[in-house]
Image 1 (cartoon, one colour):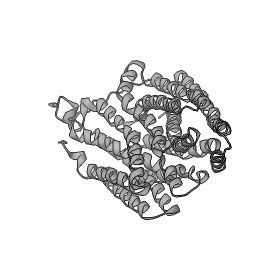
Image 2 (spheres, rainbow, N blue to C red; image 1 turned 30 degrees about the horizontal axis):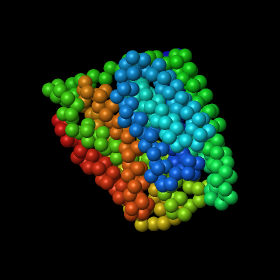
Image 3 (cartoon, rainbow, N blue to C red; image 1 turned 90 degrees about the vertical axis):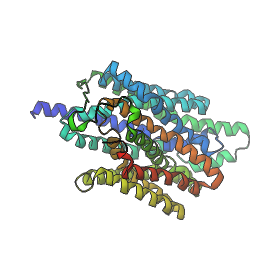
Image 4 (spheres, helix red, strand yellow; image 1 turned 30 degrees about the vertical axis):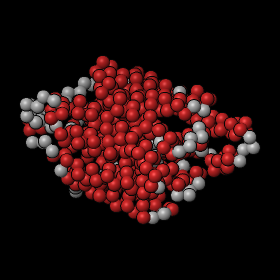
Length: 422
């Protein structure tokens, strides 16, 4: 590769890496927003607060297939710019939401952000695979994953230091407010804290959108028709004739649900264990650091020492073990096992996704969209946990929700990915 081609190649890697950093940063802000909005909007239950993840992740369900259609018209580069602009609009919705202290408006902003991310992810995930030699695609994807997880570890630290500063003291002041007017003033001041960071975020996203549109990124076309031994017989006429794909989409559903439980719900879990909000607001970062470590280990081990199927199987078993240990322990030990679920979750997406779209041939694009729709698990499973926790307790509910998720992932790793494959 010539010097000019090499510099252009790493320029492209840098821009897409920045986008993956944005994915991680925005996605993992939810762990901070859950306790913040529960306090600022005076929500009565954890289940109500978990609608934060519902609004955000349901956007993937509704926008995955439309995003692929939009990209056919805009191309990859303009599609990325459009996704960033949509995210910026979602961030700006937080301003009237804060001024009115409206939980509904906050959820609207989150859904719009999720919609922008759906478009951005649908464009950038395949783009990183095709901007360079196919034999080095895994290396590029690994770099993107590390960018994503580093951002995910940083974002709750940054946002919580702003919106949840002295949160425990503020909780007491709100609870002891002499009258409704004083309480409303305290809550209004708290809600206003999100305006500055989300305004900055909107400006940064808009600037990035402009930079992407004006950049020299090649607007490549994706030709993804698999041939020869890599393609199943062409006698299949419907995506429904690939049962392993449908099982893969279900596996993505439970995996993302488990990932969100470990990353976003951990703060609420810790608070229920008796930790103050000033401490619990950092717990999401612990999960993301654990996940980053697991990701680095997976990069080093797969496929040199272990296959992706085997890594998925052992990761599911590890998730089940950590879940049971979290249930059997209390305090810091229990929270630590929840955070360690990040270690178990790290190799799952890289294994499930390729197993799900294996040998789809001309159905690869729609198959990928179905797998992306499975991200809606992050919208549903926390709500299920919230309902169960009111009936059987938060620790028992956590185990009751997580064990079936990991059991299904184990099934997919051992045999589900082969159902209907020939």
